Each structure stands twice: as structure tokens, then as C-alpha cells.
Length: 141
Image: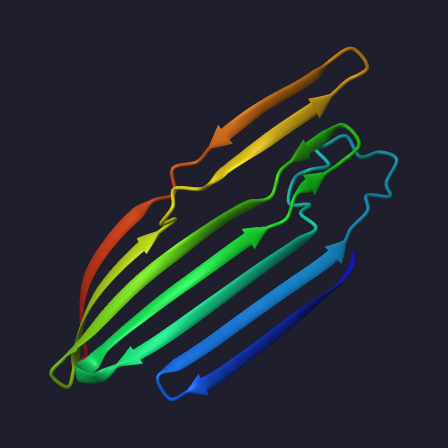
């Protein structure tokens, strides 16, 4: 297995930070005895972008976007998946924070799966429920 990862952070203004990463790699199963699913954990690339905004009066907002590249083998293929998350935090006094987070904002965790044999091609769409709403109160003692 060989690959690389690129990461970068920019802070264009005091109130805004942008972080991005991209990784790509190649893996190959070389054992002739292998009888498992060649798709298991075999994606080709992944990308993530996170943007953080800090506002007056203790407010902050975070948006993130994620993508995981396709899984491809000789007999099976799964499409790229993507999703976005959102979070808000409000500082309370010196020791506390109220947080709200939402995962998979656009309810987009769907992938198309294709399986090919010498006699047929099967296509199916898998939709994963990834949308969560989280509310929290943090306090440092």
C-alpha cells in the first residue's frame, strides 16, 4: 500500500479559519489465497474541509464537508459518498459552553453499489441514516 496526504490550514482573518485535507492511496491484494471481499476498506481517496468562524459574545460556528472516494474491484464497485456537518457553540460565563451539532446536514449518505458476474450486473442504492442532532452543555470545574 502506498499513498500520500496533504493538509493545510489558512487563517485569512482573526475570526475565520479554514482547514482542508486530501489523501490518496493505492492498495493491492497480492496473495493468491485471498478469498475475502476486495472492497472492504479499499477506498482510493478522501477529502475534508472544515471552516471555523468565531463571533463576538462567545459564539462560534463550524461547517465541515467530507467525501470518501469510490471503492472499486474487478467484480464490485461502490460510488463516492459525501456528507456535511454543522455546529454552533455559545460560551457561557468563564467555564461553560452550550453546543448544538448536526451531522449529515443534507441527508446525503447514499451510495450506489454495482456487482458484476459473468451472467449479470446488479445495481442497488444503499441509503444510510446519518443525520443526528446533538445538544450539549459543557462545564469545566
